[in-house]
Image (cartoon, rainbow, N blue to C red; front, top):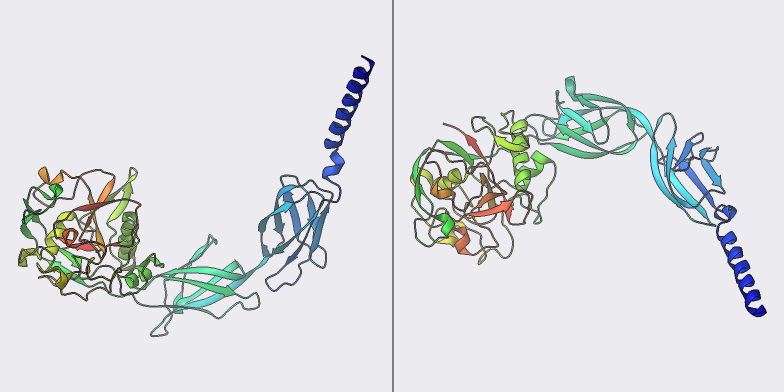
Length: 433
């Protein structure tokens, strides 16, 4: 009995000793240190920078060597704020380890005033009225006479300049702003490449499956009457997209290839942006959480499904062929059997009766309409524009990945709003008489 009591007391003392050691507050602080150096873009130390930490607030000021330090602080993850008048505030993160010294390097960008000009690439003349926005810089300015611009308090180093001017390709350029150079910056712009448009005279046609080899959603064949419109001679190329949007999302890079790997929403944005750059009325806007189309506007838009099929069939000049311009698919389309597993530059195959290229094959083309497999049964006979709602939008024309069946002029496919594929692109139309 006596031995048992002694063991119990000893065990209790050991437990109390361990608990006290684990809860010692001094042990989380001892030898735990955060230090750092603050310098400019060229590695020169900056004196007088205020350094502040979160969530625990510690404050330090850098010395003549740009150095700061916090001694005996708790281990953990800290946000570090570095600020000094005349410099862009810097925020970084430091992981301070227990019983260790953590050292970080912080670079501050000097705020400078700069001036320069925007010029025409070909004529070297200044471009007045160009809008310039610097990424992460709230102020937007417009060039004055001779294309001159001026910015105050811009961070030195690499900055992304976005320049937009009606009639010109959008310009997105990375420019290094040297603290020692405050003038002489130059941005060159090129005129927009023309989108060649084909006039499609309005009239009546039979829409849907007329050969009896289609899917259920291609029936019934029905009479449709359309107003006249213009449609792009070629699928929108990567060159067209780049000069309009300032980027190239395509998987198969070639400026003369159709742009691909875009969503329906991307296509809508392209239409509005291109209209803006050409000084035309934008067709699309948001109303009550959805995109609506003004078909009376003179800007660019996606074709309705009916407009697309009418143009693909050759309009009033239609030869009633299975593919756009021929019943021999190899004459007019890049498709699974001849594409070599990639899209091709636009316009290499023969055009259809209206002079339009690649409406069968190469890449699928977005239409405005929501998809409804039964829409043909209750579609309006005059200028149909699809159902009023849905979850997917119409794709037409087939592509380089598909066999002949999917490249027929009346085959109906669809895609969700945000989906993208390397075989999906677009063609645009404009309303007209």
